[in-house]
Amino acid sequence: MSVRIRRTPHSNRRWQKMFNRMDAPPRGALMLVCFTAATLISLSLLEFGLYLAECHKNHAPVGLVHSGLLLIFFVLGVAALVRARAVARWIANKLDE
Image: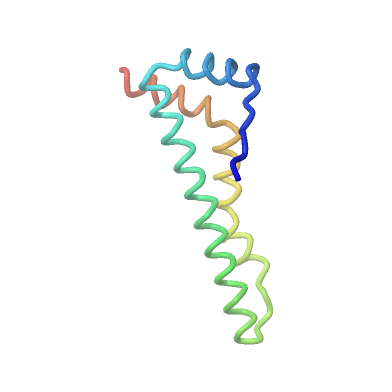
């Protein structure tokens, strides 16, 4: 059974315009920022999950300070994803100099 995938022409044109406007260095910098932010988020959540599992296994209470320290990198990763284009532009300008 084959399923036909419909593409909307408006969104396709929008993506093409966005990537045509970006040269290679800003696009590479944007990919670097997004990858770094995703890595920060995933590792932070992994560490937090392991901490919760350890506390559950040892029947120990979860420390709020320790949990807050583990989630700092999650907040930094989300902030980097929100401001990814500005950070990528800054990195591309620094690399061009």
